[in-house]
Length: 105
Image (tube, rainbow, N blue to C red; front, side, top):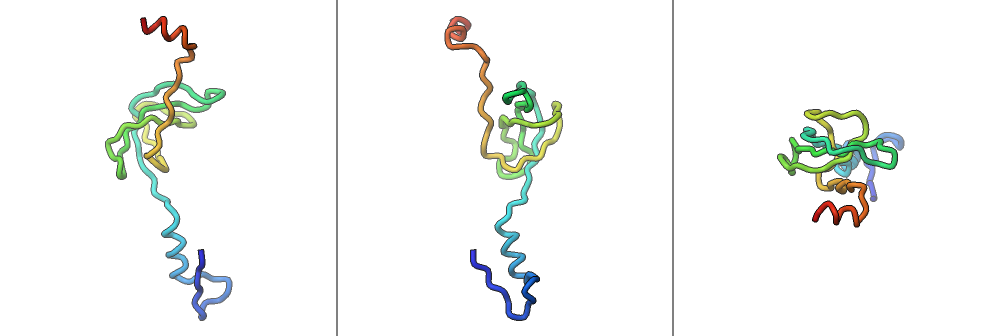
């Protein structure tokens, strides 16, 4: 990225135009979501909780997505998300293939 400085500005300070350019490239938008269901613990040591979250703001408003949440969380908590496009992978039941076939039959 090439940034042109005005001639009258000191070498160490930024001009107004330069500040506006930098802010336009940064996305500080956060999206709110309400936890509607806790699915279970996930991660190598169970450090995250997988939950179903209803998006309250943004482009995907009213969409229900699956998210991994680190830290304490309960149903009806409001969480802040950086993005709403990606969804967490579904949790596995922990059974091997043969055991799953027996349960399905």
